[in-house]
Length: 208
Figure 1 (cartoon, rainbow, N blue to C red):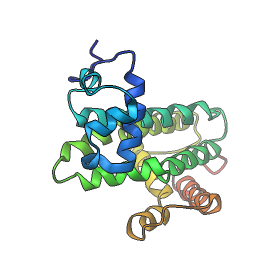
Figure 2: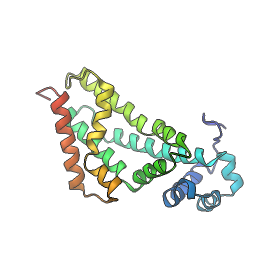
Figure 3: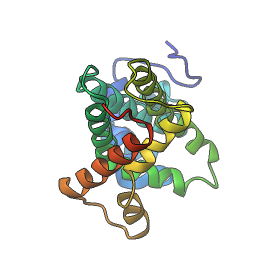
């Protein structure tokens, strides 16, 4: 049955197809990934693959969407929302950085950039299914912090955009421009701790 996205249908081997596609996209990129290779990795026929996904773009977006949703769910499940907001932000920041700097996160970003000219909708759809989802969760988190009088924020949407950018300081430019792919826990913690301090200095109440 259709799952709400035109061109996508679910079936018994749907998850199997996604896992195979994930491996091939990470290895070969979007353009380099062939339907034959994806079907082989998923151990299904091409006919089965096409019965679930009418084109490769939809398959790529479903893979990206699933990973982003998994990240968001894992992050929310591991956070004590009743903890002080600085602790919650530190946990959220660590989860964000771990995902962005993971092999999958780096590969997805590079695929979207590489295909931007030919498939500009790829980046837009990835943003809607991934970063936009995280942004919505950040807005909810900050709204709760304001209601509990832990923070004072005039423009919550702007603040929700600022925090992830603070968490990418130093690490993201090194990844993009210097090709560094491995970062220590200490390097990531340094950036996240700094992001929380700056964010709280701007928006936090003195006793938070």
